[in-house]
Length: 134
Image 1: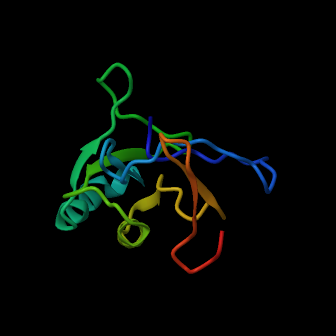
Image 2: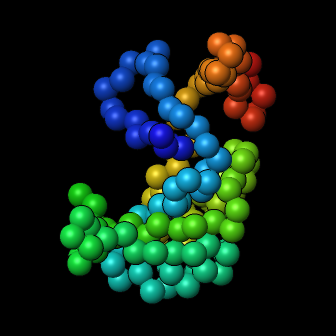
């Protein structure tokens, strides 16, 4: 189970994706895609934000993991899990404002509607914080 899902191109407007949701940073680290030359600077900025950054390594554990663009991934542990979208958006904005950060893997705002299923069979619609109705 994971707190995010990659959204690939080619889905129609009404695709359904199933994701087990946890608070962002609760079970997995928060990733930032970083260019090589800015790694040291970005790491210092991440620490200043209260994050604990770790360079992602490949399966062998000997080499830095490289994205298809040749960039690095720095995984960060937040001081506490982000249980609401506003906190996650603020962190994403702060990360993207750091020189050398290319992107995050937050995938915020990719769904128009979310249906939350409960173990007892209930399903509740959830809306984006901007006040849109389900």
